[in-house]
Image: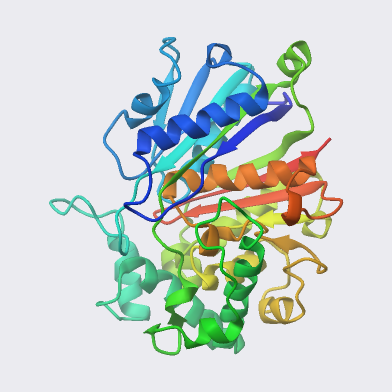
Length: 394
């Protein structure tokens, strides 16, 4: 797959709390229309569509896309937990890069319920049996919701291994809020201080406060991917292309290492990033801006190290030196990230694409990272899958 793949258009609807959004199909259709309009093409030009969502019945993708038209094209429904949106992006990029199609629509949406994530199907084995067994052994806390156990346990592991302070995670959450102030599409736009985060209700004493966790969210986002020849023939926007991309799943170390950081995808992220850097011929020092999967402040800190933004064990210094924000080494989550923007599971990966595309176009307005030319996206789903994508501005 050697064909150059351009992000010709992106679209995103404002994220909202459960119960305060339009239905999933309306959000999806709206995001797709915005992406098509941004690209300057019609739905009739689209040759394949890849649609991601987690909480919904089969063929929900068709329900949303049919509002754009019914042209008989393949519509592929994708479910890969929290990495669903970027998995759809991965599949669409492959289709365009291989020459199978010249124009693909990628769409992600989610209509979520209030409260912590949980299993929908309780009459069969859960995909998280092995994850739960390791978590029971390493951290216990069976009464805490599963996602909080996993990522709180990973944060606790980093604290024990490197002496990381709880306040460091609070600094990450405060940084997210400062960025989100400038994002009109984010769910939470109120700035909070490190002290506010520390003083929020403690949901795991000594490990996590409530503000360190992202909220359940509803929303939709989309992108249009096109080949180089198609973009030139149609006169489409060629300012941003996908320079490298990798998708990984779990390794034996996920369960065998006895490390909660690895249980939540550290090795998946590290290997996906390594492959992307190798394919692009650059290292992490070349990055200008990163959108990474901060479902919890703890995971953002761990991911700094997995992506090579700082050395292993160096994340606390990275945060304290403000190297994760404007004026530092690399601006992370200028959108406000999942912590402030929200995390509608199927839409998250495409929302990251939306943000980074605007950053590389120079159209991110008050969030703009000056001179941004190289951007990295990290989207993680437990169970598991990790997609890392590198974009270049042409």
